[in-house]
Image (cartoon, rainbow, N blue to C red):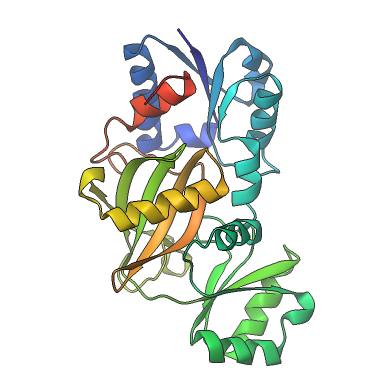
Length: 292
């Protein structure tokens, strides 16, 4: 019997779909003969009592979740997400450079420092990548600090604002679409496939200009997904590490382009698990050191 801890925060418990998912992990553990407890920030002194820890809270090198990952690693526990994946995925420059190094298809991408955010470079990027362009801060998440710009003046205004929180920004080719694929991968194996369908008149998963409007989630059976989609997703995940990832992918004329690799991906009851109800069992098996 493995003793597994799920580290979570109070804000996670407030969400009904996340609370239901946490309950599903616990039931899966019990059915497999393992113990699973929830740990909160004020209970971290008990972390050493467990064999594995699963982080279900916002991950960032500045958050408690990162401290949990590091403590777990130092104690020899099995951990999701491991600390290096948190560091990589919370720094999009690092993430995209790893994807490029492995020849993973991504939109045309450039990295600019403060001196390079100039009128001349903006005009050149519009010329080579097209109009509009997408600007991202390296530590953006949930569509925050991700904006579309259509002019040099907009480019400079947004770019300089993003540089207040980072020493570089990411500039990418805009790929219009009505949805993104999300493929959830654990240790190189696909656990779930969904489509994130954007809200009307929006272009990203969560559009903050539309009162925080969210996308709709449509599930698919893994076996029904296109092999090319799954191959790109697994290759992208492997370029980052062997942890749990949500790979966001755009499909353009039958080709697949990785938009991001996310650590700590959403797995919400009734959404990402629509056609993958065994996702909870497989994650528990991984944490317990079993084949899944």
